[in-house]
Each structure stands twice: as structure tokens, then as C-alpha cells.
Image (cartoon, rainbow, N blue to C red; front, side):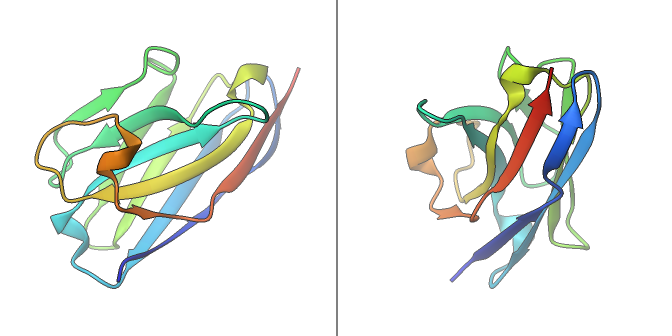
Length: 124
């Protein structure tokens, strides 16, 4: 079983920055593609970004491209999401997710393991 635990959420003013972390345990971390999703109140879950197993390929949603950066440290079993230039519309619960898919995917159904989420609130 794979466990994912996110941290780093909080309240920040528009234009500010936050760094989310997600620690993975239970299996070999480097065997998994990792991703971040988010869900705002009253909205469906939304893909944010994904990174491949080795960390040398990333894919972003258009809404965060140029502002967010995903990275991973396989020695620490951790994936990160650096969020800069935050906007009020970035307010959501952010989830990290793990997939054994070898291809780039933004489909949540391809991710078998999920964290409990961390709240990010951006005040305008």
C-alpha cells in the first residue's frame, strides 16, 4: 500500500508564494509518476501538473504554466509544488497523487493513490 501525506498549505496574499510537499511511503517512490490536482469549493477536481519517474519530464495545466513548478527528490521520497504569483482562483484543496503509468496523463483515474489534501487559500 502506498501512503501520501501532503503539507505546506496555508493562507497567503495574492502575488505570494507557497511550497507544497508530499511524502510517499510504502513502495519504491521512483516507480511512480507523481501529480498534483486541486479542487475548489463547488468545482470538480482539476489537474495541475505531473512529473515522470526520473523527474526530467513535466507537464502543466495552462492555468498554472509559468507560475507553478513541480519537482521531486527520489532520495527523500518527496514531490514538491512550488507555487508563485498566486491568484485568488488558485484557492483550493491540493492533492498529490501517484500513478504507475509510463505515459504523461492528466486523468485522475490513472492515479491509484491519493493524499488527504492540503488547503491553499489566496486572499485578494
